[in-house]
Length: 247
Image (cartoon, rainbow, N blue to C red; front, side, top):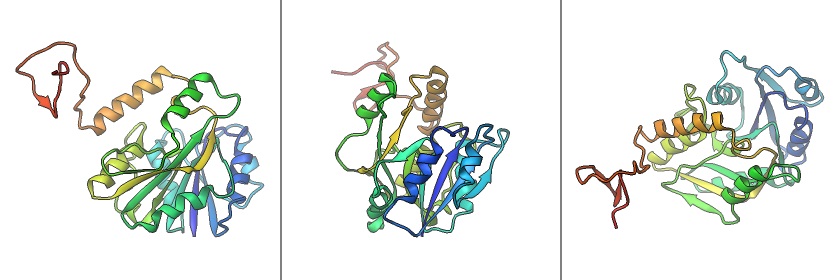
């Protein structure tokens, strides 16, 4: 069985299409678990039209990592697919194309392509078209990972759950930890979903500030961004100087 975790917060515009897209998959042994963060619109009314398990999480207790852990804790599947409630599977093989990568026992997680919609902003279209390319990648060092469209092994999650204290990018933190254990992350461009607002919510500065702070924390607080000043006494890192690029 595959368990699909759908995170929602006021997704009445998208959730019907999201769930229909999951139900149309050519893999049928699937359970759907909706983790709802205090929606005040028609999201839960629409979800009630389908055979889904619903788990609620309040604003006070919400973090992205905690919402996933709460949902996965209710899951019965060996593999956990994760999709945002405003994402729509692009075809009936989305789930299969995520799952097929786990034939390699060293794969911990897989994430798929995210494609903009016709009415997505140009900023969001630019980001999605730039980040999510057409070539499959196996990542053994790069820990980019994205839980708007992903799948992980539940057995590995029981050892490394998502960090509930982080305010964002819990997916990259998790990927970094499993890579350090010797596992691999796979990007499969054929496991595609449509994502209206993309990665950066049309360059929301507050969101960007939060994401940067967490990424720097994940990097153990070590930023490799040049300071703009040259100091021969500064430490070099793999040829990259913390003050400037040494030619």
